[in-house]
Image 1 (cartoon, rainbow, N blue to C red):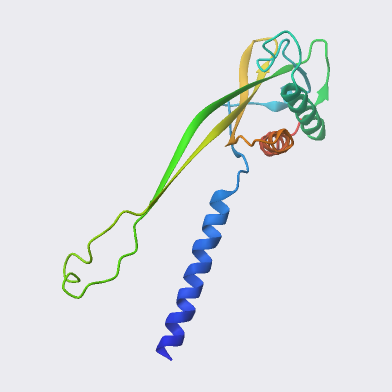
Image 2: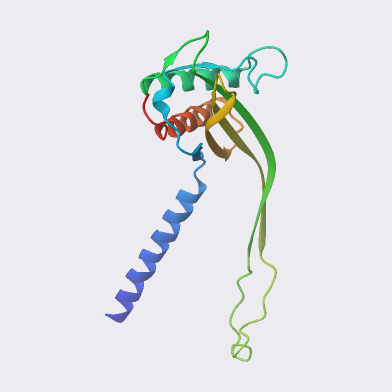
Length: 187
């Protein structure tokens, strides 16, 4: 009976560790927001976009900018804000950055347990596997700015691993905008 209990406990432990690792490996954007103290969003009924946006550096609208504008416009309009090109009460700006990162994981070598060495110190260790993963971490900032005061009133931040597929990155951008705007008060 004791062996059965230990075996089922081991299976539960393996399942829990696997679940945690799977959740940790997802690349869904991590989203945070902040707003200026005492913010009254009822003062802001309309929105527009900065011109040029920070994501447009060469004098034209990039594909990333188009994705961000479409997702933001849909999310804000769903919250009751009205898009207005001329004289909106708030302006939206985007900033994107990427940073090369490295993750190093090591796993000790499995060694047999020698009876003479098993005391206080355990068996002699060996060289194990070392996995080095390089990846690009992307950060998106969405700023909402009071158009008349030129003062930031709200900011959303999202971070995620940049994928090699443009379609996957567009999906992450849309998801990040949706998650950010879900935290924004209604108009």
